[in-house]
Length: 307
Ligand code: ADP
Ligand code: MG
Image (cartoon, rainbow, N blue to C red; front, side, top):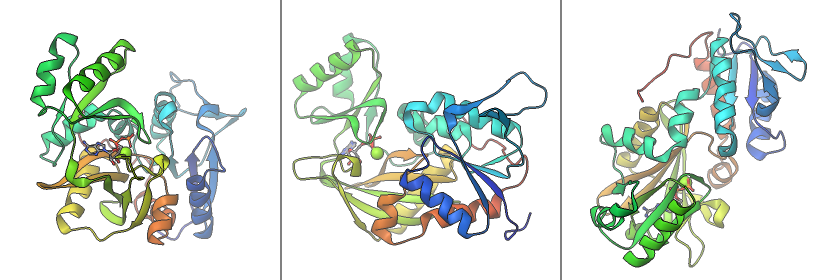
């Protein structure tokens, strides 16, 4: 396939009206491709068939060259199963199912990044209430950030100013059977972080997000604001490495600027496009489509990275 030949591209998304989905359809269509928004939860399949296939609203999905997964956090399990089926059919995934699963579990992602020496905030994890006090000590005492393992958009991220408050919040989350991690509060980043959009091993856009007054979480969904930012070579290298370690071709890498250099907070596999396109004026959707044009080959789904 050459870069210029038209492709049939699936966008796995629950809602064609979402900004990111609309922009991908628009960018793909503008570049001459046949774009289809497929509702992830309406895909069904015979997983034991010797000829892998996906049924969708009574028909078989056929002839796709690439699939762009936009799988929401609430449908990770089913969404990655559907994506795996596309992979088994030999359709090129812009992000692979295994890499998406890695990114959705904050603990697993941090362990992978740590193994490769990527800068991270000091982070701890435990199971037993008997170990709370020692765990708090291990990550350096209060103030502390406590995070739900599968939280997103800033929900489930709590700042506790004192050890006592940290203990209570940990007990409460555990009482609800939620898995959490504890993290050193990186004060000097003062409510800002850097979102780097990595596509095909390059940072193609970056923005600085600033939390609302009185808030430490800079997520745009939590009322944060965004502006264009110049990043340092070290930040660029950190973002690219983080995406590579998780195995994502398209990733939103969140970085805190700390006194000891860039620290990766998380690697998002379905980064929102509105904030970054607005803040940078760049055609990020078009660059994602261009990456698919350049890279897609049948059965090119080899799993990268480990764990
Ligand atoms: P989510 O997946 O919900 O976006 P994050 O881990 O990215 O969770 O945290 C949300 C926001 O909270 C970050 O963008 C950052 O602004 C702030 N934040 C998270 N962890 C820390 C930390 N350890 N120190 C300082 N600020 C943090
Ligand atoms: Mg985040």
